[in-house]
Image (tube, rainbow, N blue to C red; front, side):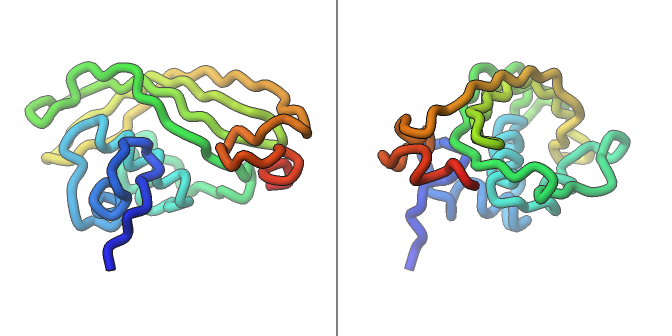
Length: 156
């Protein structure tokens, strides 16, 4: 039976045919944007292997620990791409990732740099800003559940 769950990367495609094959090494990210989307999905799924494997070796951290900063990811919006196509060796992707952390609604806006080495795309670096706003307990939860925040994601 096919999994028709929408991909966390907000592409509108189902997860099984979008980012899952990239996360499981059954497909390559052929563009910088596809790598960006797969990395966002890896953060949602807490797939540290994919995140580290797709980080340029010279700038890659030794490890990642999601327990240090538990978040609930809400969505990804791609604003702009420059280069990063199948025939390019570098590219940029500008995006906003929205999430809840410590009861605050956070928006991370980043312009990421990607490099292609030996036919594979890697995350190089990025310039980002994070804005936060308090979510009132009785407000609708920003996750889209239609529940009040206090009955949904407040304690995640």
